[in-house]
Length: 302
Image 1 (cartoon, one colour):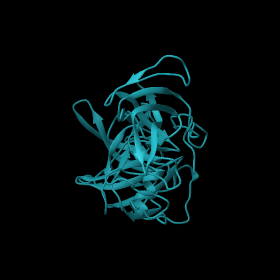
Image 2 (cartoon, helix red, strand yellow; image 1 turned 45 degrees about the vertical axis):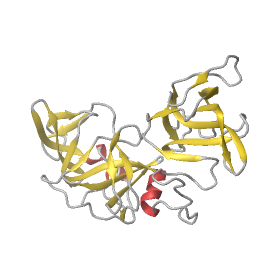
Image 3 (cartoon, rainbow, N blue to C red; image 1 turned 180 degrees about the vertical axis):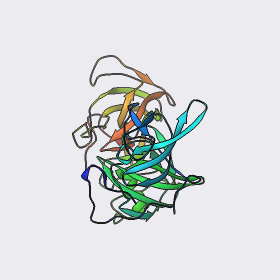
Image 4 (tube, rainbow, N blue to C red; image 1 turned 60 degrees about the vertical axis):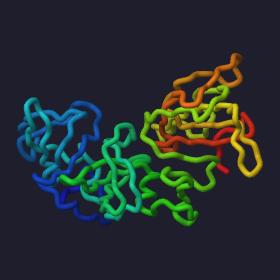
């Protein structure tokens, strides 16, 4: 349906869904700058406007490396053509799968701004991956949306939620709570970056600072946010007769309370108090929670 932009080629591809002016694909530019040009036709001869990063684009057709779109202007919407590589790095979808779980989608591959959600049993067109996010197209009532899902959620729509370790090592240990890895040292709860995190009980803050996790920003996962919090609970958690007084949380994008590890001065935490905001770990937006019997325990693989 379209030519491969930027010299990118695939051995196999599948057709786009059947979208049109009345059932468009809603999308956002790859760039977060306000610099996406719009032209009168399928050439760069006559520029007629600019698409901004915050603009909701409606794709009506794709052909020959160009997308026919409408975009918002003062008083309405305007139509024109923009180069396809400004919306996706891939000319054609590489696969179509049936979603086996409900998951959230994001506007871009940084996992920051929510776009919408994919429902179980939806047909999902896979565009391919960028770092730890994958671009997808999925149906909505008025047409389709083109967004991004995390690597962890790509596994979930492929294999579903299960406590069976054979299912790509993913499981849902608590009904209604998404995510988690067999072999991890705690529970991973899927959440968009910036979701508020509240204290589960009264206690004393051990630390709230950068670090205490192996998942720090790297070239492979540049968006990881390694802020961590450790609280000694007044009422320890009991599991199988063993006491776990420390709750540890990591992959926070920021903390609302602050204390360096082993610094002097007690800081009290109250149940329900805002303590931070969830972020990204290993490329996936989520919050990691563990209960430990030692304050010196940190996130690690078991």
